[in-house]
Image (cartoon, rainbow, N blue to C red):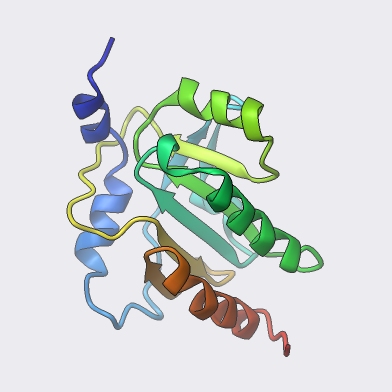
Length: 168
């Protein structure tokens, strides 16, 4: 069995790239580099190209254990709030714990995808605040990057409303 420390080291270059490339506050307009993640439920690879043409919210967590019932309610609330739009939402766990994702899906039945890094990638989360929210436009241009939990939610909802031209 692979140690937890080693599993945390394994993952995707994407988040490392994001952490290094987008450290500054002025990331709006930057294009997200191509990425691929694995969907353990579907047994399929999800590529960045799958999201082109629709606004997308990626939410990064360190591991499955960080996704508790309150986090599931938060993501589900965002999904419900924008159900009548084409906003795509996916949660990405940096730790590639496939069985942990499957256990979480069986226990809580979230109505959104929980993805893990593909085996070809490696990650070092560094000192980025997790969860990290990346809101992208239809061209995968980064509109907003937020770190943290509740502090980020209100700002995130305003950014999504703005991106989707919704007045509330």
